[in-house]
Image (tube, rainbow, N blue to C red; front, side, top):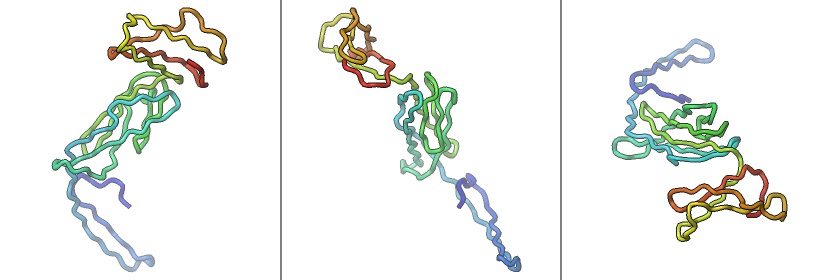
Length: 173
């Protein structure tokens, strides 16, 4: 089985009988596979430290037909996230990395953000007039009353507020 073929050119195959008395050769001409584009899906992803997320590469020719090529995968910072030969990304440390899939000289990329372990809670305040500050009251480890004024949530531009809680257990909010 040949895993990687040359982009163009010839391969000389030599077959020898088990007893060594007969030998034959054949030259194969390899036509290059022209890759027009590589797209990585999803284009953006998030993964927690120690967890994995699967990326997929869509490799197409000039006619737009999908090719069955397995690209080479790489991470621009393996100290933040690693990627294996099938596109599985593993979070190593907090940060953002670019994951690249390369097939016959064409590349596609995805941006992966690695976060610490925890839970992100969202509140949609787009229809409410809550002002610029929103607090979340929550109980960790049982019903023991919230601490005033609670945890300040971060506001996103789309009207969502969120709070990241570095937890590994379920809690009530």
